[in-house]
Amino acid sequence: MGIFDKFKIGFKKSASALTSGLKEIIIKKEIDDKNLNKIEEFLIESDVGVEAASEIKEIISSKKIDPNKDLSTEINLILKEYIINLMKPLENNSFFEKKDKLNATLISGVNGVGKTTTIGKIGKIFKTNGNKVMFAASDTFRAAAIEQLENWANKIDVKITKSSQGSDPASVAYKAVEEAIKNNFHQVLIDTAGRLQNKKNLMEEYKKIANVTKKIDQDAPHNIILVLDATSGQNVINQVEEFNKIIPLTGLIMTKLDGTAKGGILLAIAKKYQLPIIALGLGEKEDDLQLFNAEKFAEAFTQIS
Image (cartoon, rainbow, N blue to C red; front, top):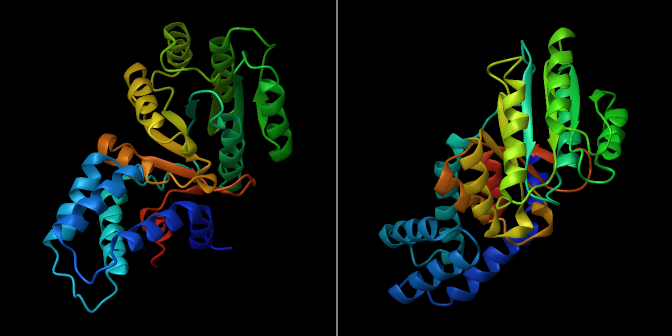
């Protein structure tokens, strides 16, 4: 299955909701002010965000659309072009490539977004690309978190640094980075406990994990990735806002896009924060984490190739 097919299947719910919604609005062979306002409202309801929806409305309004053509298709073409222009600069095609020296990545997010599973999937891609990979089990809070990460390490045959449940998560990260440097590893993926962005003590602990790695490598952690759950809709905006305040994020991964019609939230985040989008989770299988590609995303979201 090609990358477009994976994107297309993964975005089936979001794309279906979008196309059917637009067709319901455009029942006449014209785009008048009333329909323009309805389109804007529909896009906002689809979690695209107020700013992006307003810009898309203005673009549609300024275009001279041939009334003899299918208007919903023409609007989807406008939306596709808008998405590509907005999101193409946010691609990070080098993230999964083999590195010349150690690259430590801190994986963060609230409870239940799929951080540990995402780390397993990232680790597999890293290894496939020739990286020597280590996992750091710094989620010492959640029951079975260490075991879950260890299962992934065994499954894809990578090294894991761990301690017992309840131990200091920062010390686990420190040991992992220290050992990785000594043994010429290319990648360290640091798992962290799910934490609500409004819990100050947990967020301070998260900051400590990042800071302690700097004692070994002043540039570490080299990546700060926030994992988001697409099914959470508008809640993810606040998560990006708060996590980015604690430690500036270098990228985003959005999971569970196959299980929601709220894929439009990615546009809202892209418009507001302009943060690199590393990858998208389009299913539960090992290979369902896909490197973000703006054109494939736009094609799948609008169902126009």
